[in-house]
Length: 75
Image 1 (cartoon, rainbow, N blue to C red):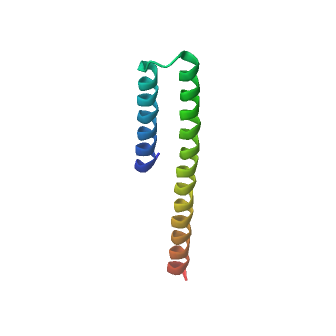
Image 2 (cartoon, one colour):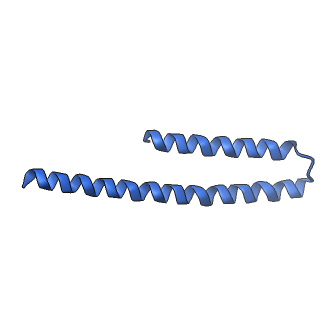
C-alpha cells in the first residue's frame, strides 16, 4: 500500500469506529441504532468507492506520463 492509501484507510476506519461507539452510547432504541449504523456504513462504503476511483484515475494518469517519458527517452 502507498502512504496515501494507508492514510485514507486509517481515517475511514477511525471514522467508522468512532461513529459506531457514539451510536452505541446514544439513548436510541436498538432498531434505530441498527438502522443508523447500517446507513452510516453504506454511506462510508459509497464515499470510499468514489475516493478510490479518483485515486485509480490519478494512478492511470501518472502511468501514462511515465510511459510517454520512457518512449521519449528511448526515441
